[in-house]
Amino acid sequence: MPGDESRGVILGLVEGASVTLSSRELCTSSAIELADALASGATSSVEIVTSLMERIADIDAPGSEIELRSVLALAPDALGEAPRLDDERALGTLRSRLHGVPILIKDNIEAVGLPGSAGSTALLGRPVPHDAPLVKRLRDAGLVILGSTNLSQWANMRSPFSTSGWSAVGGLTLNPYRLDRCAGGSSSGSGAALAARLTPLAIGTETDGSITCPASLNGVVGIKPAVGTVPGEGIVPISSSQDSAGPMARTVRDVAALYEILTGLDQVLERVTRGFDGARVAVATNFTTGHPATDQLFLEVVDAARHAGTSMPEITVLEADSSVDADELTVLLSEMSDDLTTFLRRRGGHGPSTLAECIDFENEHRDVELPFFGHEFFDQALASGGRGGEKYRDARSRNVAWAIDQCLTPALSDIDCFIAPCYSPAWKNDLVLGGSGSAHWSQVTQAPAIAGWPIATVPMGVIDGLPVGLSIVGRPGSETIMLAVAAGFEGILDLARGDALRPTFIRPQKG
Image (tube, rainbow, N blue to C red; front, side, top):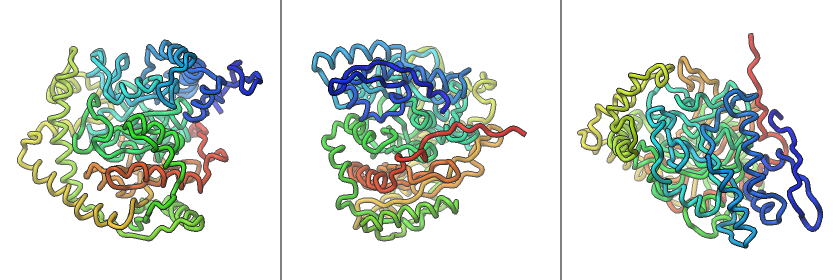
């Protein structure tokens, strides 16, 4: 695999024997495996961080062999924090089970020393004044902030013609499985970096689909918790009613361990290890992607779970129509109009301090900011009048009534959660026409997004060399059960045993 050259390092003693681990082994290990290796003395945080940085330089950075462009910036203090955390471990001071394990955060989340740019040059050179609360929780738990990940600029709420994974600051993030394919959005870099073994853990954010999509397209696990479960301050906003940050990783157990840190909840990992174990799960039979192979694989996965002894009745979940779509867009535009201006004013530094000034900035720097698509959503948001606009209140009221009263509450009346396929295999990137013309997806993200309810995603297999995921929807507060269900599917499918979920970095053939 490109970038996996071994770099033998004597890392310590395990059960009295000298052990040599390669850089590849450190990069491919899960977060909990790394935590166990740290606990046994088989490695150090310095060695892990160094190995990951070397791999990022080899295959991800501009000018590297592949130029995956999933990592937007490296934290300047990562190599200083790692030895300090190793020293704490040596003294017996452990802050959490993930003490000393590195993590990447999406670059719309503020962390001191990182750009916090949301992919826009309008925020470059404007130092982040303080860590977002969720970043403080990560640091307090002893995780190493390794860097920040690229994303769809402004979290993909700038133009209906955007290409997911592109930003003016970070360029276009590629899919590690096939380099001409989409890495999803808007947490593109978080999903791609995990798949490419550049980090064991990542943070994404989702308004509607932005963790779900890159998790599915990159073959990783993610959960968008219910809105408010993870602190939202210090995140470049779209919608206070729909935005949420959430953990992403290559295994469900890693996501559960990170979820404990982000939320302060106990025994999540313990419950997750029991899998289905009494969870009431239904199949949303009408939520299909319209991509035949994806929908067929989903049915096969459901059959496998049933044959393994899990009862899963079938339900029909109310689908959205064009009026629901229109109301959601009105809500997002109106809330962004207010919330983005508030954020820009708080950020400080030289640059736009309102949405209107941001639009002017992009127009003045259109060769950098608008080379492939415009900012139509920004224009519409400015014209909306924000939450004081006459359309907002009615649109939000109708949206919530549809999502909670008509859709989710009836669907979940007798069950803990329901499942559905989410996205087809990754489609080809197209910076000229927009990147989603051949994409297929189900409606599984929309109702929980509007309601602010949780959704989790876990790999369910590979189609023509490209991963696809299965999504799980539940009520607020049921995230632990949802992750346990994800672990149940992970155990039944056992995709980690072979090379199915190992990226191939295939380049498209020319001519």
